[in-house]
Image 1 (cartoon, helix red, strand yellow):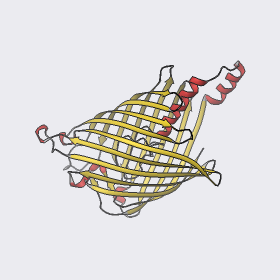
Image 2 (spheres, rainbow, N blue to C red):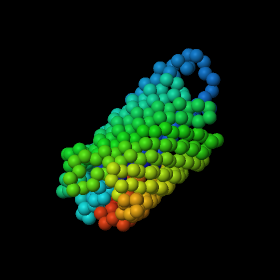
Image 3 (cartoon, one colour):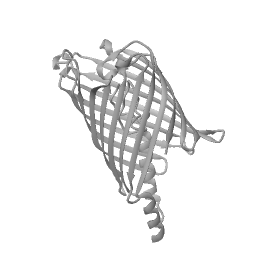
Image 4 (cartoon, rainbow, N blue to C red):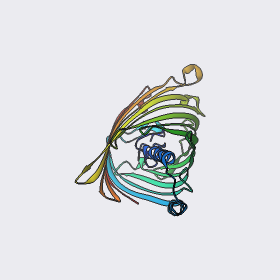
Length: 339
């Protein structure tokens, strides 16, 4: 489980990286939606009163939802938030569901509320079974100079049926479309993590953090696009040993095409996270982490409302702490039904 923002597989919060790895963050699809809305606001032609009223009735309130079932193989089941890895491979079923309500009074203003549930159940390592409930709310307005927004996320995680972590993230963002091909988004967040049911002999990991992130999208002549993100996070924990400053970079490239007249989207991504923990002089242990993750995902639309999904990722988590120093490969296949 890794509570950090991700630009790629958190398209549907995320979806986070499911199961043992949990990521909360703004996803590429959300950013693309912001980009599309901003562009539409700038290029919207003058319409008649009747046309405006008809569109208003259709777009003020909308609902969307999805359900996902998948099976994964994990080469090294782990919980990164607890610096724990099993060094054991296992299979798991993945069940996800999401419901979203969007209110859009006009072309510039949009508010969204969503609730999602993700459950990962391992075949043998039940101690790593994860249930995640996420609530989110966001609102944005496309001014002439930029699109400004506010967002809030609340996630409750259970590990092996017991409350494990409460995660809250809230912040603001600003995005702007430059021409027709480049979209820039900058966000700042405050993050609060509260751990529960931690053994008495384990240190307190509760923490607060400030994070900033910038995402740059470039759209090519086709529908493919490239993304680069720079990120920084400063986290202060109840126990100084877990204080750290982190910096990183995310890269992603998405290429859509068709097979048998059905759309197929393939995405390749790379994530780098470097964490420098508190030094011994500051009450820490001088820990250093370097995390490299490579991902690939393919979504094939066999029907307007049904996608087949294949994904794989390889993570090299290097750390001066033994429990946080490991490698992990995850492969997953599933079916996603959406409306």
